[in-house]
Length: 89
Image (cartoon, rainbow, N blue to C red; front, side, top):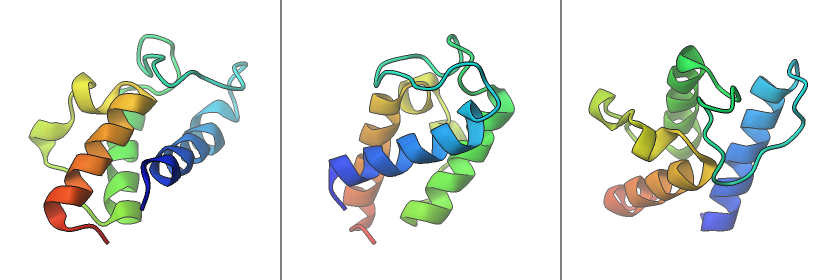
């Protein structure tokens, strides 16, 4: 899966599940999910579950850090790294 496909899949999931009820309709690739109120702490856990189920990678508890899960760019890089380490789906 290409980085573009990963990012598109993640963006659509976040739009559908977190922005639907919010006044905000979009977000930038480097907007902080937590600081901007896009995703809350429970949403980050849901996002980790989505990543596992969708991309077939194991998300360790220790991986759930802002450096991996707080922006779309961080999350896309994290998933890409995990896919390369795991050999990809």
